Length: 255
Ligand code: G3P
Ligand code: CA
Image (cartoon, rainbow, N blue to C red; front, side):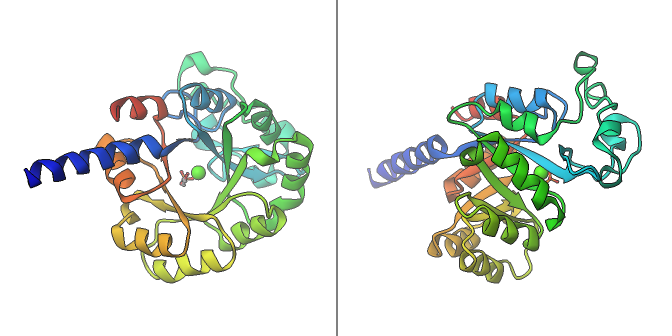
């Protein structure tokens, strides 16, 4: 009898944690659509993701553009460095065709296009891939968009995420890491500087790291999880958001 009750309790707790967890579409719905394009961002939200994650750089003409790599080679076939190429040149490239012919014509987006597309009641997770040199342009475009309340920031760079927190004190900021060394000390530092939480490579989601973060009142997010088993594991441990390339599919699998 006791065992049956315990089993029932564990299943109920697991269903509850899965129901609570939010899904963030990694580089948009990037399993189906070309990553970091307007098409993949819109599809991410359409497929039910709570948030869409994108990566940003700044161009020499001060435009904030959405792309994961430092260069355009992998996603456009032409090898240009984003930080030394004007937005006019970058916009000539096709960032969709490599994924599927049907996406031919997708461009490397301006951040302002993605901001404009954020649906009501959804959010955008902006990963800052540069140092603080991006902030003058970033502040400008966010202010102009009127969407500041629907933005959360993430960055691996400590300088970038702490600067984001200073410049956007009302926005949730998460420090990203996949490094185990000194993680507990770093989690304490996140709390000390007022970050909302940490965004961990899912391999770092352990009960010890969760306990440390929770004791300090920090949220834990994780990336990049496309396996239902791993999603259940991290949800049961208490992460509040799972970043995935397959937001629609993963949610279905967990029902
Ligand atoms: O959501 C965090 C994740 O995007 C970090 O890794 O390389 O995909 O930007 P990466
Ligand atoms: Ca990213």
